[in-house]
Length: 186
Image: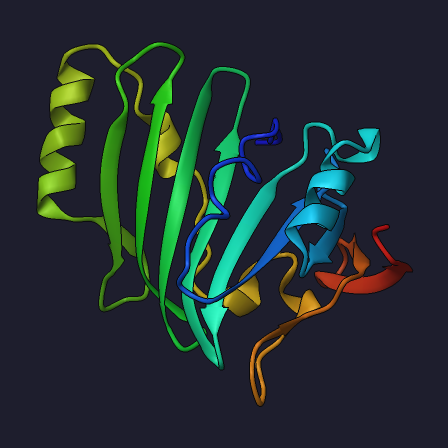
């Protein structure tokens, strides 16, 4: 699901809700870097090691997560996820996306009592309409994260006493989902 283009940094950073941070990965998603400065994040995006990687923008104030926006792409579909939180836990995700030239579709997923993400009744109905019309909706089923601590860049974020982002890069070791520092992103 790699692929970021320059969509992430452009257009998302104008919110006045609070502090912001950016996270970008290499195309293989084995290295994630955190940035507390939009200028440094934009500069890093121009580095070829991040071409085709994933990207995330986090908005927060104090110790409260306001919004996490993640852009996802495959060869023929793209989506933007907007995560809402209660503490570390994700409570709702709004996913907006499309397959090639199909019209955009926005669906809401919530966590059910078993802890799994499910489409709201309205979203299920809209998806069924799109499926019946022969439009692709497989991108709705792309993986989601149930908590901030489950994102691959989570170790670049300190939650207490207030949220802070490390301006650093970390390499994911797939065995045990552990990160090891690999230095500054700039």
